[in-house]
Each structure stands twice: as C-alpha cells, then as structure tokens.
Length: 269
Image (cartoon, rainbow, N blue to C red; front, side, top):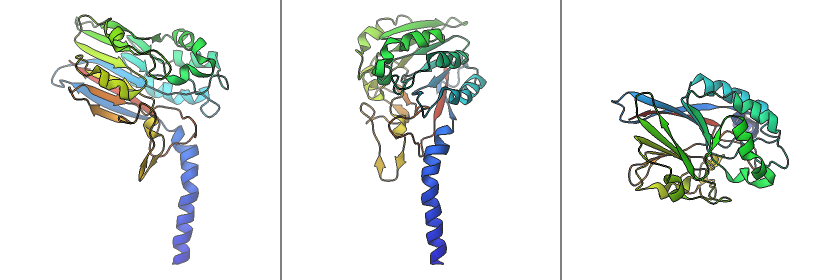
C-alpha cells in the first residue's frame, strides 16, 4: 500500500512540471462578461488581449489559436493592454507579428497601449509602427470617441506605461467629451485607482499574468500589480476593473492555475 502511495506521489510530482511548462501555457481560455444595465440592449462587444510577450518560448505561430478564438467572438472592438514583446533584442520577428495581428478582426476598431516590455530591448523604436501596421491605434495618454449607429458614444482612452513611460490620467481624460460609456486601458492595474471619481465605467489592465503560477500558500505578485492581480474588481466608486492574465509568459516560462486568457465584455448602456 505504501509503495502505491509513494508511486502515486512520484507521478504527481513528475506531472506538475510537465503540465506547468508544456500544457497550460498552450491553453487559451475565453472569459465572457455582461456589464452595465443588462435590462438594456447590448451596445458594444469589447475583446481584450494582453501580454502576448512573443519570445523563443512564445513563437508567433502560437497566435494562430488566439486568432481563431478571437475572431469567433466577432467583437466590435479589440483592445490590447500592452507587452507585445518579452525581450525584443532577443526575439523580434516584426513582420510575422504584423501578419498575425492583422488577422484579428473587429467591426469598429482595434486599440492598444504600451507595456513596460514594449519599451525594453529596443522595442520602443518599433512598437507603435508594428501595431499600426496591424491596424491597431496606439493610445498614449490619448483617447477616441466611437459613435454607434444608434447615436450613443463610447470613449476609449489609453495610458502610457506606468513603469517606463510617462502616464497622465489628466491628459488622457482631456480627450473625453460627450460620452455614454467610458473604457480606459492601462497596462499596470494598480494605477486604476487614479480613475476613481472620473465617471469611468470600465478599466482594463494586464501586466500581472495573474501571478502566472498560483501556489497554495503564496501569491506571486508583480510591481504595480500587487493590489489587483486577476479578474474583476469593483473600485470604491463602483468603477469596474478587469485584470487580464495575459497570453504569454516572462522570466519562468510556465503557468500553473492561470491559463492564457481572452476576455470579452458585452456592454449594456
């Protein structure tokens, strides 16, 4: 009996690293949410991607599954909340990335913000050009108002990266005029508290990777992702914050209990 128990424990111990390094990082889960007054019609479908972090451990061909799942959702808007690259100096493949991201379709538009890794390794020179070539508008302390067919307006704004950029909430919100719903993008989630009291309905962030590896008695945290780590939060003024766990990995290229994610938001207002 003891031998069987020990053998079982050994099998589990051997399986954990195989799962963490080879299986879970290759998964892509889709999480869907209904936000706003759900008694009203659905006005806008927003699909969020984050932290792709292309690298030798996350080659561009891995995006094929993401593309299929994203396009199946038929979003009105796609947003990317930063960290396209992991280390641009070591792995860039610009044209391949452009080709892949160009295949992601949105009926209204595609928007992105800067992440800290998009500044490092020389990526700052080409990040915006790559995203623009893939039909993403990069919002850097800026925003744009979308007019819907029924006359309602949605503001989408984006902060510069809060670690290596020069973020300004005031400058971002200066682009906002008349609107019915406001979506703000930021790479680092803990800065979302800065939007409290600004009549913002939804903040979308990434950066944390959801901890990337969830341990029973220890929570892996990242700088400016220590308060808000994964999933949906409600801020003090009832603003919703969602922290996407990202698609790629960094440092240790493993995931455990935090599979790669696409998040989809049906907005009612």
